[in-house]
Length: 337
Picture 1 (cartoon, rainbow, N blue to C red):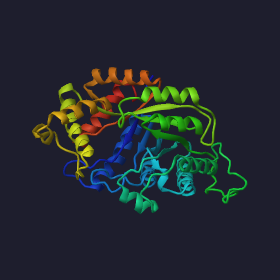
Picture 2 (spheres, rainbow, N blue to C red; picture 1 turned 60 degrees about the vertical axis):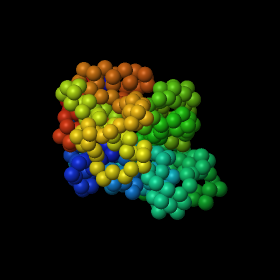
Picture 3 (cartoon, rainbow, N blue to C red; picture 1 turned 180 degrees about the vertical axis):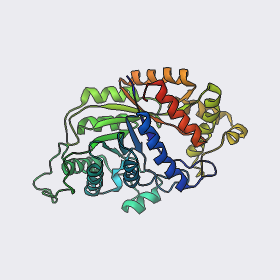
Picture 4 (spheres, helix red, strand yellow; picture 1 turned 60 degrees about the horizontal axis):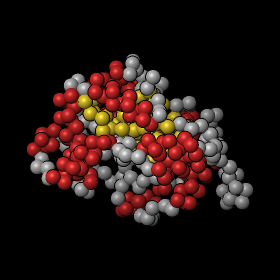
């Protein structure tokens, strides 16, 4: 049976504050825990007016305290900005607090504009591939997932505390074949961001499976896929919400810094150009939209195409109550109660 997880980006809804968005994330995690979802991941974005989640570790600590069963994790920590040692210690603390249910998802995107990268690590330029691999190897050594620090490494012998008995599951997140290849080479689990790139994910997942080998981040091949899902009681309500999402994605592509999620009324009144309508059609490849029957068929088909038994849904809607209803319908569809 298909397992369902959640990736939540703590979006700031119309008329809401960032504090409300964060509280909604915790409320959603509690709701997902009761409904039987497999895992709950939170994202990392910087210098954002529309997304409140900038510190996954802090948010996960609160989420863990309000849940009891569901796996909790980062989707993901943006390792290029940080010391692998500090990331390892943060997640060892989380694993000590919530043993056996913590995921450490690693991303390589900047998560914001160059000015944020400059503020976080003193350099707006992206990390070279070899630099990222060195950070991943170091992280694996601290977490004991299969990596070993070279004896001549200046940090050889250093341990990441607290020394807890279990370790988080390590996932590499990506939206390209490059990320899949690195995950396979490093021995990490792999999560494809279909909600970012609606094409090429299936071949990336297949290549990952073919080339996987044990490495510093683990020894177990596993794939899941994250996709935008807008599910409502009827196709019509879902489509109304999807149009607001269409406008949000267009605004992002144009570099506009909205303060909150657009309303369906804004989307209905927006004067789309022919080019923008083409972009909307392209972006719909990243989304599954409809009533229960339509969504069940589309999600099942997507999972089959990736040869995975787990999909993480990213539900973004103009009203938090509709968002909760979307996840409730999904749980009912796949018998997760």
